Amino acid sequence: MFVSDCLSINEKGNLAIGGCDTVELAKEYGTPLYVFDENQIRKNCRDYIKSIEDNYNGNGLVIYASKAFSCLEMCRICASENMGLDVVSGGELYTALKADFPAEKIFFHGNNKTKQELEFALANGVGRIIVDNLTELEMLNNLANEQGKTAKIMFRIKPGIDAHTHSFIRTGQIDSKFGFALETGEAMEAIKLAKIMKNVELCGVHCHIGSNIFEVEPFELAAKVMVEFIAKIKQETGIEIKELNLGGGFGIKYLSSDEPVAYGDYMGRVAKVVNDTCKKLSVAIPKILIEPGRSIVGSEGITLYTVGNVKEIPDIRTYVAVDGGMTDNPRYIMYQSKYEIMCANKANEPKTKVVTVAGKCCESGDLIQEDAKLQEVESGDIVAVLSTGAYNYSMASNYNRIPRPAAVMVNNGKARVIINRETYDDIITNDV
Ligand SMILES: *Cc1c(COP(=O)(O)O)cnc(C)c1O
Image 1 (cartoon, protein in one colour):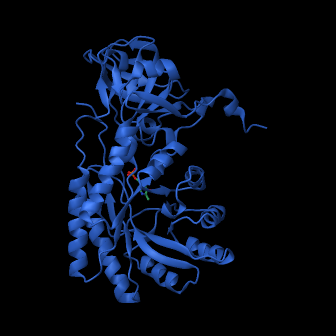
Image 2 (cartoon, rainbow, N blue to C red):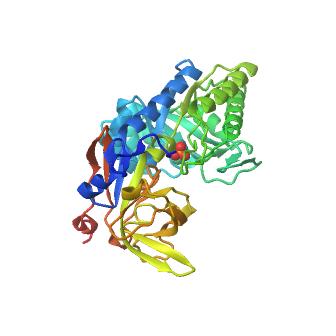
Image 3 (tube, protein in one colour):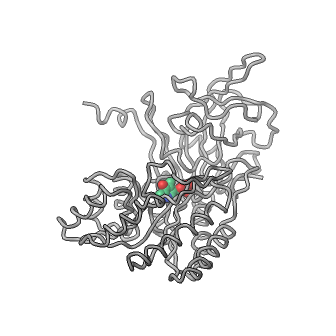
């Protein structure tokens, strides 16, 4: 019934997460509040790891894409679950290192890494740098030379598959700012260049075809294209590619009606394509890496708000204004993302109203959800927005000088703060 197993309704009729009453959490920690369930996050990590072990005889690695939700505690949880970590900026890398995440299991992505970021990554012994373009390749080779190191790299490849949420297209020439194109020969050119460079070691190839994908076919097709490319590399350059990173992008339940593919099904079908294509083309099966972000944390986090006012505009709509908005969840204003909402302190009551949940920013588009079903609410009620674990805190801003909310992690009925609520002093901290 719920979007995640960590959610339930308790004996008081309140929404609970990980055994904690959300109304009590709101009281204790204030709102808006992000709440995450540790057990379910850890279970997701373990399910992925088991699934990759089952399907690739243990020759695989699951890498958490930390841009979905990055903070020290999340990095620590991933480290303790033996995950790898994907970072896309110096700031995410810094967070991982400060959490003592093992540097050799960090994968550094990004389409425009700066010189400082690359130097920082090299100096700290980041496991793999996923090189996006020739300018970066050259810069990295030079920087590694200066530091007397060899940078272990993968190449970001555009496999020519454009996956949207409910469909995908295979295009001849994909329009993307990320990576090297296959069909123009650009990718092969990069491989040949890397081969003669002294301070880079080519370890693998990478692709990432999109996000919140509900179909398996685009992943199967991408895997096939990538293995074919590995065979071509061997043929043309003699290089045996040992690692194939197939990226993330697995869909999650935002609505109870969403039906994402189970990890095992996805992994089994893609593994069959990888194994069959390798056999057919006589290449050794590479180590398989995957990079889930959203599907590790997305459904395992919620946001709690307090209702301020309810504005009924006769025959038009009812606005329920809450104490957060686009500053803590910009996904609706950016993508019109669907969410399930409920009144946390009336969770047992039927949803009899259709309302628009509005934020508090000076921006008409600052909405959390339009025309959504909700219980009859009044000022002081707690509204929960479900499946906000991914790309909410990590996309939050201080627009209107609104402090970012706190985040708490719950585990079997116990809660702990993992990110403090920002203060007004935090807001002016860099002002001169
Ligand atoms: C964003 C991203 C991911 C994670 O995507 P999800 O949809 O959150 O699973 C993985 N790899 C790369 C390179 C990314 O940019």
